[in-house]
Image (tube, rainbow, N blue to C red; front, side):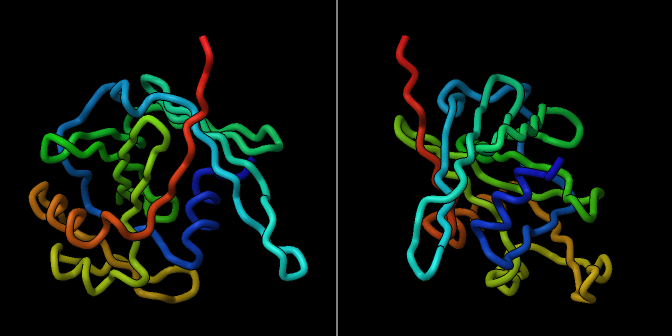
Length: 185
């Protein structure tokens, strides 16, 4: 089965790649807070003959201990919290879901999760356009070459630098915005 989460990030962010960190930030949380829990959806846009149309729908459900992704073809991918998906609280206010990188599993990809009554905003830490900005905040180490022979770096973080980088460079930038599905009870 395809990795739905990776497909989501890849499609929405284009050719960008997720930054790799040597560790995850913050204090480990054993469950998602109530304000993040819920079911969300995203209509993924597509272009046909130069006309933009709604494409596939992605459903994103956050329960107490996992994230479940489902596309409109009913392909499911569950990501339970554990050793390869770690939820942390950084700076006392930012929830960060860190996952092992797909190609470099010794390293972590980090995304900040923020929710309100209508939406969830997921802020991925990406490399392409911000690589020089990443290096201003975090020390970097060369870890190898990718399949297409690009240099791959991992960044070393501290909680303070993570918060500063998020607030100055990421927040308000590229965001995955999913709509909350209201469930009548």
